[in-house]
Image (cartoon, rainbow, N blue to C red; front, side, top):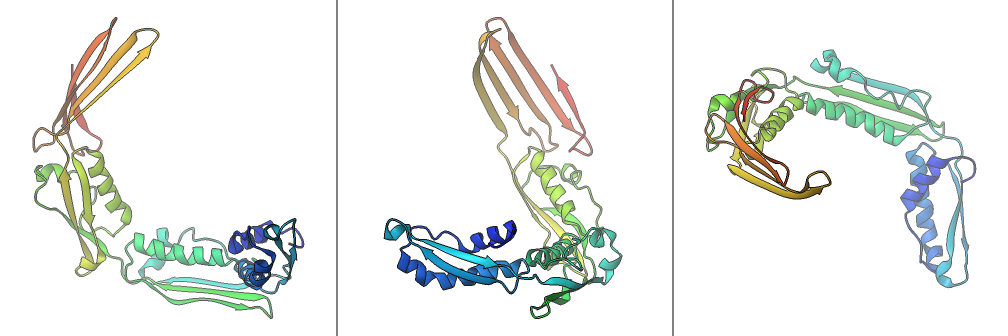
Length: 304
């Protein structure tokens, strides 16, 4: 690579890939393909008119030949205009519009990866924040290699934001509905946000009551923009036992045991016992837990 262009060099190497072990004749046939891959790699970073020459350096044997590309990048394409508009209700949603990627900005060397990141960020935010009917009405990257200029235009029409509806728990979970409803941290009718659904899933998983949690909050099941939330729970095994042995210089050999009952009634009570046995010390502790509201953070623990 003529000049100091480490990013261009590494990108070209990544596009071309490994060519080791090929004979000199095979490399000669492959050279036009390698040149095309190098040109594609440079275009991705804004260099549309490189000068590329190739040669074969033959080694001691036919299989040690090397394909060498000499690249002069030329002048880059620069971004001469950037238009990014969010239309519809999302335009007044500060968490949607704030901190969008600054690049590609006017004056930047064109980077197709930055353009894709900006485009994908808008689409991802729309899905996470409940603008499921949103779409780009204009999504263009116009490049003129002759004038070395590029124009970025992204205009997104959000549509109405969906809302979260009632949370229903499918039958078969065994627990009291009142306990499960305490895990729901949002009120029906709030604007959709994927984090609210993820939090409900996480809290139910961390409760220790279930082996699997499946939450369906698909926009395809929405009615009048309200998405019902359906939760399917599989109760875990009631009990688990763990044991281990160890050695330390102060107590010598020791044994540790742990017994836990993850649920003992539909109200979600738990209990367990732990023991440590060694020659100088024998400990046994037991505990009993009662969940409060909210059960993710509040509980009563009785121990002895």
